[in-house]
Image 1 (tube, helix red, strand yellow):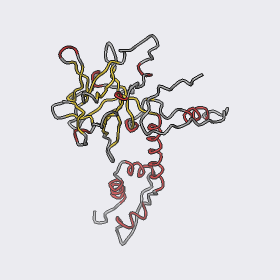
Image 2 (cartoon, rainbow, N blue to C red):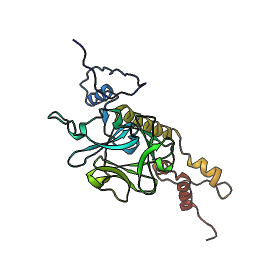
Image 3 (cartoon, rainbow, N blue to C red):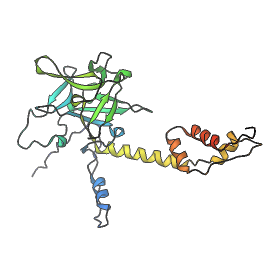
Image 4 (tube, rainbow, N blue to C red):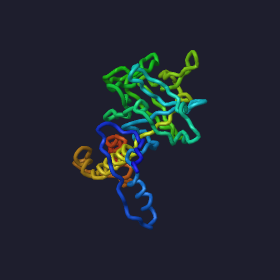
Length: 277
């Protein structure tokens, strides 16, 4: 009997990863970890925060009467909003269980280094970037990235996402003459037309979690020595160093927020006494 061919979307050059098997354990908590490890890395999942939006990306809008996906037609070199129910049957899965069935439905998300912004490149053709000009016209014909090709994903409380462009307006689905739909980028607020479901592949979500753990681990390795810092940079009174007894966690929090120097100065100001007062 011939093996059933998988309909999972693949990309040229991707390595096929086998599922890792794990022994069964009865201890609480191990079962969920085993499920995560055994999950197919190419499974399509919803992101839990904006930093997880990366790699192959499937963008859906819950339009009425039929939900649509944001596609790129490489033949006509234009963005197409295609109905997901055009081939619907009684076995059609719920909206959030849908996965892309063709490469035209997939965009490749890359993150801009040191920024919360992303680029969305077409997954088919020569690779064009999703762009929006100052008039709100959305296109995908540029092969180079610039400010108009940058988007800031905003994850909403219900799990949906909005995309803000460089002009601080939002990507939206707009109905034009004849009832057809197109993308616009001039909405000032997030409403129904500006809300999208975004799906990414499991391995990229895991990658985002690993990066976060490395950053947190790296920050913990750097110990804040307030005494030495004060003695070197902030000592007064013939080199006398005075440090506060406040919780060190406040300094750690300040460092993560990029205001460590300011926090140290504030603490020093509270402790310093002026004998001439």
